[in-house]
Image (spheres, rainbow, N blue to C red):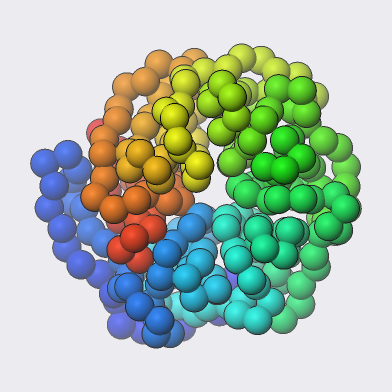
Length: 275
């Protein structure tokens, strides 16, 4: 997506917190070109540019990690965007109202491919693996749907174990799914789709969940309804948890341990160090 880059005023606010080091926020709430309303998922590209699902303005906003506005795209091609995954100049966006995932070409964001509505029913979280296959947490099919680069169906995973998956990530040969069903667990599957184990139990009422995994395999879950961030080890031991002002949304952790998280209510992105 580098061709979209343009320097602009940095929308950065310095903040201070007893829980975090060097905390600052990016963005501003509103309907303007550089503003966001009701943020959903977020994703980082290889340059650490931040791609933001600007749900309230029905578009994708892009900022540098330092807070400079780059560009936006989507517009009339989106209806109710929820989550985003970015890899090598390609953006994959789930749209709940359109009931599909949409692939945008970073060289020309008017070029899009949509998934077949017969294959994806209610797409939530999305991620891209090393072979550029797309994994979609489908809350209506109660499974993870795997699509190829052309958004054609490959396989369906977790049909018997999942009840309402909200997000999915890849870590090594494992597929991690945040599920909002009866048991409300984070589930770990192997590359063949076999359940390896279910780890920490999620709270009741968490209808909107986002998740990310750091380089050590620690799993962070952003719980919008209960307004908290929880981080556990890959084996499920909870070691960090904090409440947020405003409802949290998309979350990512960089290789350097910087947490990038969205605030749904305030239209802001917060960046701070992992404790």
